[in-house]
Amino acid sequence: MPGREGAYCKDIAAIIGWGPALVLTMATTAELTANGASGIGADLGAQGVEWRHLPVPDFGSDSAALQGGWGGASADALTILRHGGRVLAHCMGGCGRSGMALLRLMVEAGEAPDAALGRLRAARPCAVETEAQRLWAVAPAGCF
Picture 1: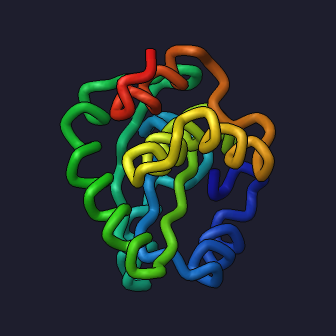
Picture 2 (picture 1 turned 135 degrees about the vertical axis):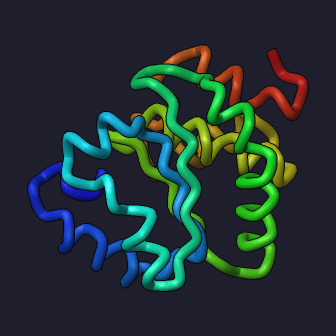
């Protein structure tokens, strides 16, 4: 979460420096506000980075915003990735909600769910914290 450690501008600069074409924010509006990150969309947009806010409650796996926005966000993310671009997903702690979003993208891109989760957890061991998050992420593969 940009600003979580009290250095919002430094965190935004690090994100911009990494060069994502798209940032997926899975944190809630209340979490953004509490961390001084309520301007993240405008700040990223000013640097030419697309931003999608798909808020899901902490440890959650679904929300109306996610249901309504995932299709477009996913299509854009997969297009960016297929063309060699970068997509960054974040939540509050960088584990559950962001992990489920990245796992879902991996599955939608054609990776086998178990292999994708293993690869994701090799990079971020805490990725995908609940069974409900895993089930949402692997749903496109029909794996329940």
